[in-house]
Length: 74
Image (cartoon, rainbow, N blue to C red; front, side, top):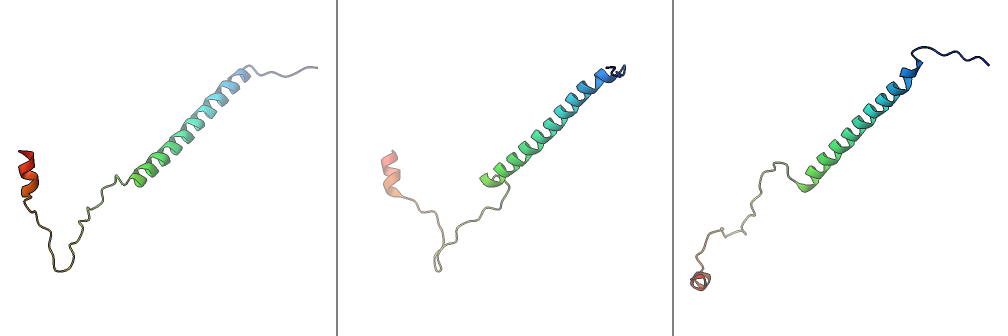
């Protein structure tokens, strides 16, 4: 049986291999990008305004000197 072979037919397999490698690398890039973005969102590393706890009604937060701990530290 006679089969027709083209002179440049050998280039098809390496081109298909390179194309599949490029597609695989791009898909891996997209998956890693989404995973990193989700990790940052879950760990709350984005810049969020800090919320200070409110004092109960009728009180205010104040720094008070603690004599007990100051004497123990010396």
